[in-house]
Every structure is written in C-alpha cells, then in structure tokens.
Length: 202
Image 1 (spheres, rainbow, N blue to C red):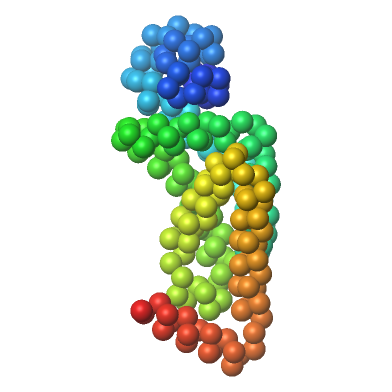
Image 2 (cartoon, rainbow, N blue to C red):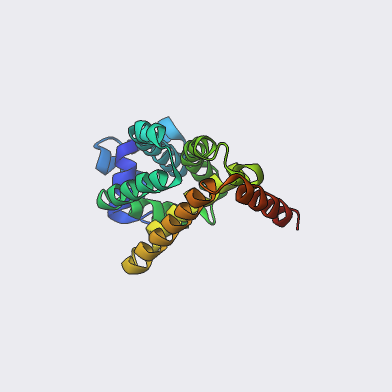
C-alpha cells in the first residue's frame, strides 16, 4: 500500500488520491487503507517517509565519503537528477502543496525532510571541522538551508531548467570560496575569523 500510495499521487495528484485510487494501485481492498493507517493522509505520510528512508540509505555511503562542500554538492546534483528521472519530484511537489493546509500531513513531511537534513548536518560538521566558518556558522541551520534549497530547486527547475542549473553553479562557487578561505595563511585566517565573528554579533 505504501508503494501504491506514491503511485496514486504520481498518476492522480494528491487531490485525486483517495483510498479507492490507492487500493487500485496496490491491488488491495480499500478498507485496508483505514484498517492499517487510519486515514489517507497518514498513509501518504508513511509512504513518503519509507521512500525517503530508502533513498537516504541508498546514498549513505556517498555521504560518508564526502570530504568537501563541493563533493557534498556533487552528491546533491546526482540525487537531484535521479529523483527527477524517477518522478519523485512530482510527488514532492504534490505533497508539499497539500501539506500547506493540512497540519497532520505537514507534521509527517517535516519529519521526513529531517532525515535528509540530519544526513547533511553530519557531513557539514565533518567537512567544516577546523574551518573559520565552523566557529560562527549555525551548522544545523546551514543543513536546513541546504536541504530546503535543493527542494526549492527541484521544484523550480520544472519551470526554468536553465535558472535551476545556474543556481546550482552559484552554490558550487560559494563552496569554492569556502575552500579558498581554508587555504589562506595563518594571518589572513585570523583576520577572516575576526571579521566573521564581528559580523555574527551584529
């Protein structure tokens, strides 16, 4: 039924997804939707979480091997391409739109996105260790920003592919700047660290 729920969203959109359409996609009796999950919203939330857990597990080794921000962004690009090709971006767009006015579904989706955010945060702590950026950056907040940015880009690219590509390139350029900061000499690094701290107190 979990796979059937995602298939129903791909075929009919969230507004057209019902216990009947999910049951048809899964090849089961629609009464089982309510018996096992209580509601269509709860089933959709569970389906999204399972799918995300599978994707996070699939990319776990890639994330574990990341040693720089640019490598993290490269993993993000590959993930983005794969999710788009598999039709998962369409499901994402539909569930996000539905969650805006559905707190029950929104709670499930927040928890689901946290799986990606937690993975990214772990990588950021590792690759930024010893960097002047790490001393002032809100790493959990930065992880949220990165995961949110990729969600937004996945949706935006559907209407402006070139704009989405340029946005990814710009993020990559920022990652290069961070690497350059880390390669500065001790004096320049101390000056940069001091300026960053002052800026953070404003």
